[in-house]
Image (tube, rainbow, N blue to C red; front, side):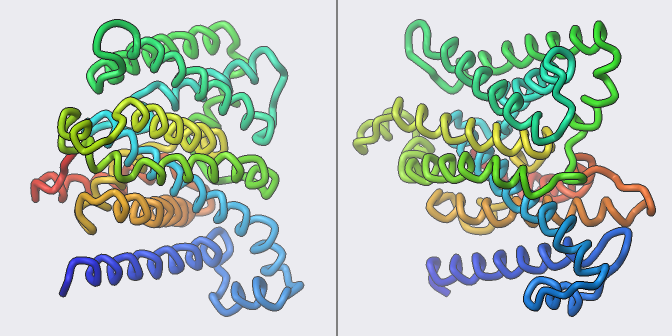
Length: 332
């Protein structure tokens, strides 16, 4: 089978898997609802109790899962590309920790106590953290090289962890509320959050898609990329900005959910190869599948309690990544 045909078949299979994950997310929970009842509620506007649960609670939760999963997967893919670091994820530039600082400050000093209120603070914190990292990395000779970006991110991340810890130890009343957000979850999210984050996600997607060819060239090395006519600095700035917007919006909506940005890019490359014109859309599909399946499994393993999606993503994602490592399929 020719490579383009094979990739198209695999992409179709991934989309089918996403549709099944969406249906599973809508049907499974504290109250199991038959798939036929789910479709009836969505397509024919049923008015039963089950239909109300689906429309008012599970549809917003599922939509946010799709958006956040795609955002974190795309961000991780781009960050691994621009840093040429196979273990890069949205936390490498301090973006996730910046969002955490924003939420801590909102709870402790601004009197913000709602998920919809956290979004703007988290997004602002993520943006400021990424700007600080890039400013540090771009200073001095050589500009923002992958090593300097990683080191700058580690430094800013350590600083922000200290700030978060300092605030929480002096404002103990904020600890429980922050811990609920910090663990990473889709529970309790409503349609208003969808309306807040989707414009940012759209902008982020446009930015990362625009540098797909540049990421392919960067994978061959900076000198080769320049020889192919790529503006390496522009690719890094645009890609980094897109990843920041995507991560900021995703983390703001659902908390710092782990492993999506790290594992999904490697899974996508193992499936469709290294061409980012295929890796990016595959990651955007696999990311929501992993997050929705994790969230759904978390609802049923210890009923009637829920295990947050941020915990389940690591439990489910680790075997995939271990398998890829054993097969030596993990590449930068």
